[in-house]
Image (cartoon, rainbow, N blue to C red; front, side, top):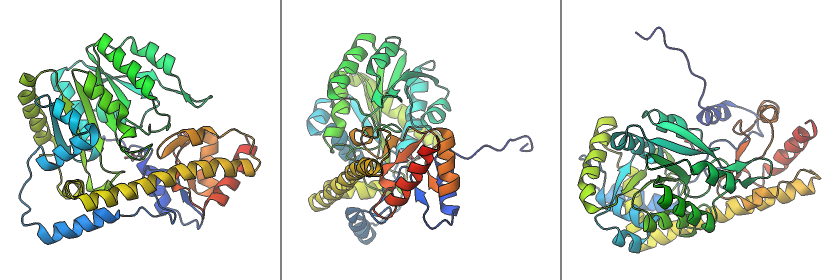
Length: 399
Ligand code: LMR
């Protein structure tokens, strides 16, 4: 039965993680997978997470099943974090949020749910988008279309072209938007652009579907959800998949959520039962540990404030690294303009170099980045920046 299977190439992002780990070069740099790193190059466990874990260990009395929708207290707190208490209140009876195994689990659950609701639905994804969006959503059997998003020459969003393409999206379609910190390009929609997209969704009747994996890592916990909240307040239906991997540093604990908003309360029981049945059919129920941590942090004022403080430090560090990178490239006399890196948000930006130049960085310098030239800015630090700039200078010269 298994003889005819072909081997697949490594995952474009996870493969880099494995290659980096296996590399013994003393100056290797990991700018590949999107995990936050501190000044020492470590991915720390946040202080609030450590403290919450201690408290959970001391107080937890059972490991009984949680159920396909996860912990309702976590679900409510996550909904408040995304939407704000007032919006949550105004959506009473029109919204449900369920815990998922990370953002990926949430995306797959959303895709299967969409397939149930509208088997021939099309999902429009940005060009470029996170490489896993297409396999994750496509595997549920949904048709994928793409809309232009990023102008690689000018390093800006090509908003007019995006809006032109989305004129074609209709009530059979969903448009996937990155809530903040666009992965891979780091170029985020302005508030005005979110408003124009909201008007287009209302006019054409497509459903907005938001992937929110980096809340708090762009401009701030509230600033980063301007678009999510605007859509929730204005549209009849909405899907939001959120992740606690990055903003709580809970990567391996697989902690995410799917939020679905519907037009009228009579539709909600069917939505809730369908989502629960799909979850049951794929993974039965989500893992508990990460969600228990988030639940405790968000419901305990001291833990919440410690978490918020550390998240602010992480965000400030990333933004500082963006400026540092740009100024060090200038100091090194590199003529190419990298100012856009300072304007972009979150962990990622494209360097804008060729696949061959990326391959040279990996092969000759053990500097790991995605083929598209996406870098994780958080992988830069004071100890590796000289080596990085020097290598980049050489690779750019040899263009
Ligand atoms: C990334 O884009 O590097 C992260 O979202 C990690 C992943 O799963 O791809």
